[in-house]
Length: 251
Image 1 (cartoon, rainbow, N blue to C red):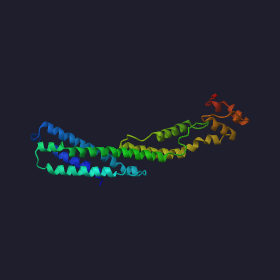
Image 2 (cartoon, rainbow, N blue to C red):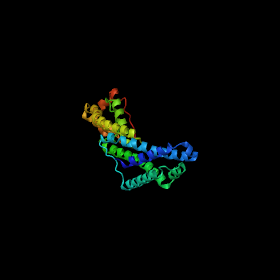
Image 3 (cartoon, helix red, strand yellow):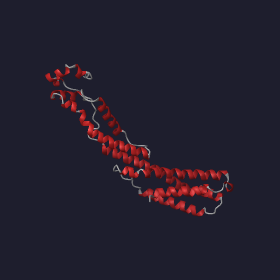
Image 4 (tube, rainbow, N blue to C red):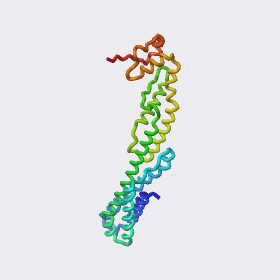
């Protein structure tokens, strides 16, 4: 059993009982305070349940559940005890006494603990998926994608989208979105491995000197003049080969 889930569920169960006490026995302020506390407990439980629900799905991609820190586990145990004690003491109590217990520091701290843990657990899940993203980065993913003459523009665009996917940090995502992002990363890595080599196939069909010229031309520094060999000049003389080529002068 997950300790935080037990804590949040216990808090919600306790406060659900309080909310069902007949309205005639309570003044409006007491009912408002009880409802606010019940909503806090229910929100923490729902958030944590959503995160825990996707743990098996993330595990399918090799992602381990984040560990509960020792200090946090101690806070959870303390909060659970406070809620158990409060539940015992309000049995048969008047609505005024119930509202007083709800306002106590121990109950408020217990609800804070449940809320903070559900939020921190989701942050930890985001960090775990982001670490996985970095581990999954394909070789050469940071290199510029160049659609060489004769290669597919659609292929180049698809590879650039994969680059963008792996460049985006994973943060502030919901549990369901984390599962989707991890699946997208898996699919992207597989697509990159299959499609990236195809981009260079057009170079392999060229004269070796033309291939070398184009590789240099695609870099930041460009191709040096010494690479303009007779074979390259002949290739450049064909308008179909140069429709996307530009000459840039640098000092």
